[in-house]
Length: 84
Image (cartoon, rainbow, N blue to C red; front, side):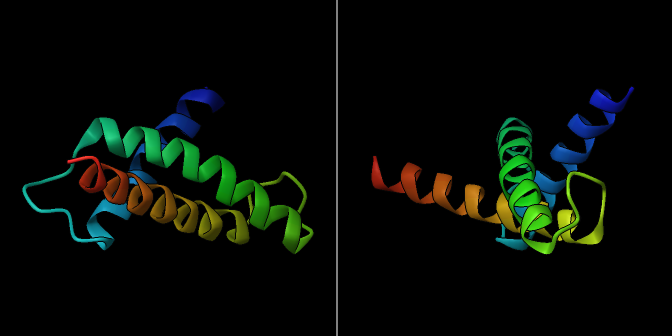
């Protein structure tokens, strides 16, 4: 059940990152899923370890997840426009 919760949370964080960055035409759910999971893992893990929270669910991990998803989403958009 924890795994499903983490996957859903990652998808929601990825969708929030797209909304914050100004996604037109709705949310691209596959991209939201990938960027949310990758951003949550990287951003949440790094910010939790820097804040000294360990690997527990803390606000620093939640904020780091959103920041990580924003970075991954912005990088993906940059890469997509660059390759055109």
